[in-house]
Image (tube, rainbow, N blue to C red):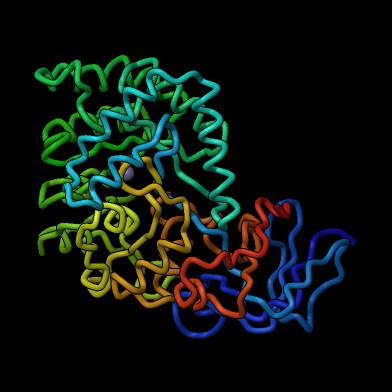
Length: 401
Ligand SMILES: [Zn+2]
């Protein structure tokens, strides 16, 4: 007899379409789930549960896949609480504060950066995030980008090289030269620690030509593409991401019909989700709109066009200093007219799609045993009871935390 049985689950969200009740969440009632060797070994009715070495009684609560936060900037020093206060007092957000964090990050020791990454990773885990993507982007020198990724890689396999976050002040009038640095020595130094490459494609950061050059260089050395796109205004980022086969275009706050059509054109059929998926996911980051007091992205327009949507925190010290996926779910439901089921799916399976992962964000045999037990009978409570600590217990790789 081996394994760990999570028993007496009132509502099990599997994200396996067509397996449980109708809808994207594949809900099973009165279920149990067996964990062996860090993986889900069996899912079925509680009445049929196999014997196991250990047992967790969920007491009728809801159990969900652990959250997949596919967009976070955790490697930084200092905070920008004063900037936040100024913004709440009426100053607009321009993205310029990134340079403040760059200065603090460059001045920090490895130990300080590591402590911040670990503190925030632990904070996210307590709130149910079992997979997290972490970007560089506050170093912006060869050495500082490489060490940011090295430190991020200590806590996650989903690391993203974002040397093209902004043009650092010392290159202010020489953006071409900075792009050359990013594509050359910086990419070479970052490559051993990175899975993804990303660019902040925005009027105040990198234009389409620079963004295309950087992303293409990353692809040439085996990095996969994701893009910060269309956050502060209309622009070429989303269509560039689609053109380059990006796994995800992130923010998507200001979209034209052509942007939505481009995303929808990447749809393909699959057995895992009714209506298929889009190869390029739209990752929405409502924490950023909340924290910058900006209009939210139009999630309904994307969903109604058949675009796959993910939700993520964008956790960073400037524009969204939250690590809470439940908070983002609540915002998506209240402010972006996503249904609770759509929001929960986007925060779990959607995030997995945005990272091109099929072993997380889902609870089926063979998937990683990453799950959360809520202090609530249903996933609905994540939006219905905002701000309440509803994560009773987290299993990460099958290990209770
Ligand atoms: Zn971001």
